[in-house]
Image (cartoon, rainbow, N blue to C red):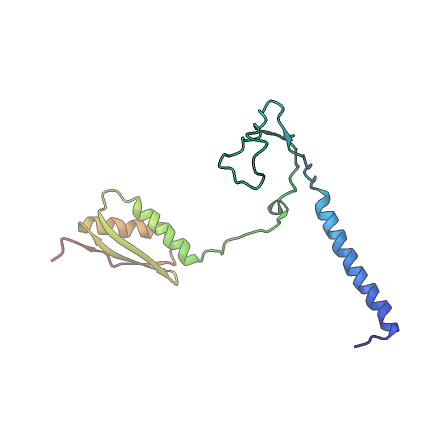
Length: 170
C-alpha cells in the first residue's frame, strides 16, 4: 500500500504529537522521583588478596578451591519516594440507609437485652411496622416483661405481636 504525499504529512504530525505527549507524561511522572545514584563496588583495601597457588599450573585446569570473598564498600544513597497513589484519592464511601423496620428491630433488641432475669431465646422480626417476637423463655413473667419492654421502645403506630412462649406451659 502506497500513501499519497498529502496524507503523509498529517499522519506524521499526529504520530509525532502522540509520541511527544507520551514522553512528556513519562518525564512529568518521573520528575518527582530522584533517580538512585549508581555506585561502583570498590574492593576493600583491608581484605587479603587471593594467594596464587601455582603460577606454572595449567591455565585450563579446574580448581576445587573457592576464591576468598571480597568485601565491597558502597556509598549509601538517599532516594525520595514518589507520593503514593492512595494519597491523592478523593473517593467517598457511604453506607446504605437503614430502613425504618431495621431501626425498630434494633431498638427492640436492645430493650429485650436490658430485661433483667430473662433466660431463653427471643427472636425479633419487623415487617411494615409490625414487630413479631418469637421464642421461648423460662417463665410466663419473663414473657410478659419482654413484651412490655418491646412496647415501651416503639411508637404508638407500631404493632407488637408477642408470640414468645414459656417453657413451663403445658
